[in-house]
Length: 298
Length: 194
Image 1 (cartoon, chains in turn green, blue):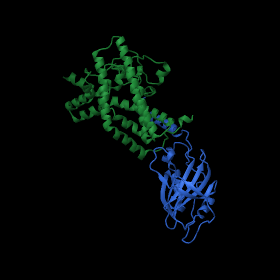
Image 2 (cartoon, chains in turn cyan, purple):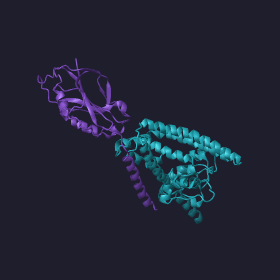
Image 3 (cartoon, rainbow over the protein chains, first blue to last red):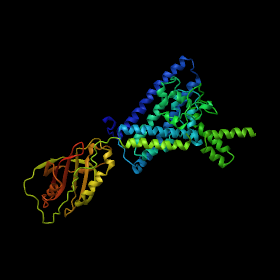
Image 4 (tube, helix red, strand yellow):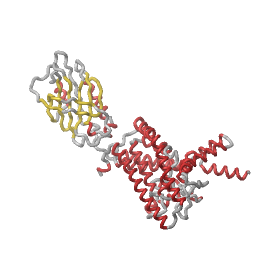
C-alpha cells in the first residue's frame, strides 16, 4: 500500500494533468471517428451533423483562447488561497488525489446544479446543451464563461489543504470521465456500474428536453449524488436533445454567444429592474414561464 | 431530499472524505526529533576559553544547501528554532522521502560568540518545491565530535573545546536518523577562518 502514500512533487502532478488532458483529446478524436463511421453505416450523416460537430470544436478553440488569457489569474487565486489560508497540509500522494477526486466530483455536482438553476450561469452552460445531436464532439461544445463557475465551487478544496495542482488534476479527471459519456453508441452498462457511476445512459437523460428529464442527472463521475439528493432519472424513453428555443445554426460564433445574446435581449426588453435581477438569479425556466404568461395576456 | 438536507449531507460527506485524507499513513517526517539537541554555548569570554588543544581530525566538507528554518538569535535559544523547525509542517509535507540527516549550521557569529545565524534543515535534494535554502560553506573542517551517539551534554561540552582565538566561520552539527526518525548518531565540525 506504500504506492498510495508515495509523495509526489507538484511538478509531477502538473505533468500528469497535462499529459492525461492532452492525450485524452487524441483518444476522444479517435472515438469520434468511430462514431462518424457508425453514423455513416446507419446512413445518418447529414450536413447539419457535420457542421454541428465542426462548430463544437471551434467553440473549444474559442474557449481555450479565453482560458489562455485568464488561466494564470485563475490559478493564482487558487495558489493565493492555498498558501495563505489552508487549514492543514495534505501530502501529494495518490491517497490525497483520490480523496480530492471524490470531493471535486461532489463540487462539480453542485456547480452543475447551479448552472441549471441560475439565469446568468445557464447562459453559458446553455451552449453545451444546445446541440440537437449527441456524440463525443458535443463534450467539447463550450460556452464563453464555462471557466468561471468552477472557481467558486472548487476553491474551498484549497482551503482544506489540497494543493492547486491536485485540484486541477481532480477537475480534469471529472471532465475527462464525462467526455466519454457523450455518445449514443453505448446503451446501458451492467447494473452495478449504472448504480454507482455516471454513464452514457444517465447523461443522455441529462441532455434531454423530454419534460420528465429536465434538470436531472447532474453528476460528473458518481451518479450516487443524484440518487442521494433526489435529482436522478432513469432513461426509459427515447431522448430528444437541444434547448428551447432551438439554435438552428451551425455557426460556431453564433452558437458560442447564443446564451448571453438571448439573456442580453431579455434584459433589454425587461419591464423593470426587479425583473432584470430575477432574469439573472432565477432558474431559466422562470423567464420562459414569464414569456408564456405575457403571451396569454396579449 | 430537499435542498437544505442535500447541502447538510454534502457537508457531512466532505468532512468524512477530508478526514480520510487527513488520516492517511504518513511517511517519517522527523517532526519530533528524538533528543532534540539543546546545544548551549558556555560563553567564551574574550581571553577565556581557549579550546581543547588536542589534535583534531581534518574533514573535507562539501558545499551543501539545506532547506528548513533559519534565524539570527542567541545560541542559547537554539531550542526555539528547533521547535519552529519541528512545527514546520509545510516543509515536512514536501519531503520526497524520509530524511536520514538533519543539519544545524552556525554562521556569522557575534564577536562574543553569543549570537549567530543558525540554520536547521534537510538537504535540498529531498525537499520538493524547495526555495533557495541556506548554503553551508565547503572546506576543510576540524572534526570536534566524530559520528557516534552523543548525549546533549557531550555536544555542549564539545562547544567548549572550540578554539575561540581563531575566527570561526561555521560550526556544523550533523544528526543522522533512521527511517523511523530515531537519532542514531551525530557529529560536529568547525570551519576556522584564516
